[in-house]
Image 1 (cartoon, one colour):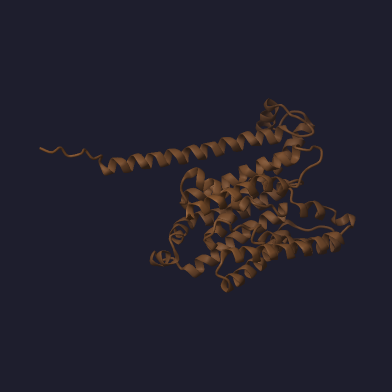
Image 2: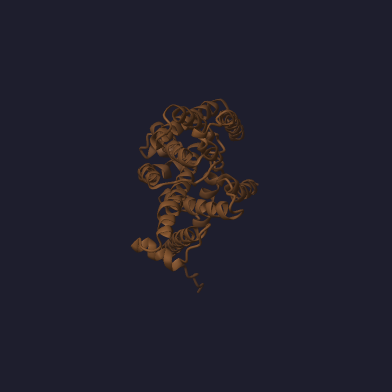
Length: 355
């Protein structure tokens, strides 16, 4: 009699694979959470005034201790840390939405010129408001950045209808970015008044000068946008399998694509309004999260991308502050240093996979 090969139950294999996936997801999220707290402590501890970890915890919990140290932590370092985390997460999530929209992993707010468009309009508004009224509100900057983002996005969408190649679309985005940057640099060059000195620092990209009012405004906008994006996980998942499949699942593709651009523009506009242009985060972080988690499921990738972007920018901000202290590097210098090699690796791997 011939012996039949023993087969493992399909259901058992499915449960084992499901368990491995969940274990992997849990591990990555735990690593991100631990990294967030460790880097937060390092950011608070590092600076012109070094504060021991024990005293940091005491000040954070009880708000008691040396008056100067309390002010340094609560008024300077903590708002900056929270803003770098929130804005980093927003920028990474914006990149993920753009990549979903254009169905290309190279799409990002900085590469497509969207951040540059936001930066240009914000520069105009800052010069006008500071020159006329001596101050400018956070909401005015966010609205200006949103308008600039939509202008650049509209240009990219028009070009996308005329060209079929994604490479040509990326070149068009880079060109619009250069044009907007040239206009911004022109404005900054002739904006030397003491009333608008902050324009120079902002135009270089930085998380410095953040306060609790900025944190509250950014948290409100980014928080609501994140929730809306997370609620779109199922339609995004369907859209990733193709427009035809998404339509068969009841997704209004036209409305869905408009909503993707709208949410991405809000996120990138908020980042640009508060911190200026920041490069490569929107491309590198989504790629790293997909590789780490081994999945592209939006239900998992959306929170992971947000957390990963926050941790990534917190690390880059720490390096920008301390690498050549007391001189502070602009944040895009550091994000480019770490993000560009990741993008190059992504392009090489993508090309190999095609071969």
